[in-house]
Length: 115
Image (cartoon, rainbow, N blue to C red; front, top):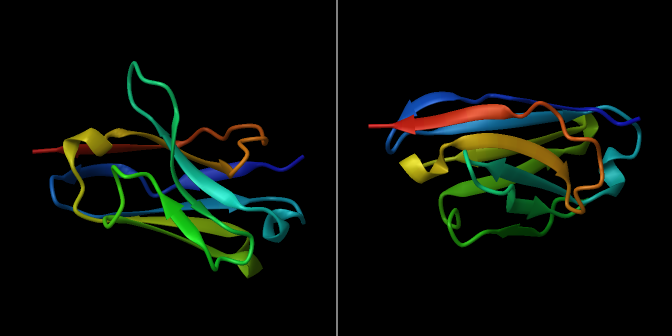
């Protein structure tokens, strides 16, 4: 069973940056497209960024395009999310999963953006 462990969240001021990491166990990591999701209080979980298995193609939600960058290191079974120019509306719990969302969800990592 693949397990996902997210880390790197925290409290940051408006305009600041954070780098999230997601470590995945299991041997099938490199074969799957991955994504970062987020869930704000009272809202549904949304997909904010995806990356193909080899890392060559990425896609972003309009709300984060130009500010967030997804990347991966298949040798380390890890996917990253670099977040720059953070806004209060980026406040949420961030999760990683396959692009299909088919794995059991990890605990996520809290990102809070404040003035």
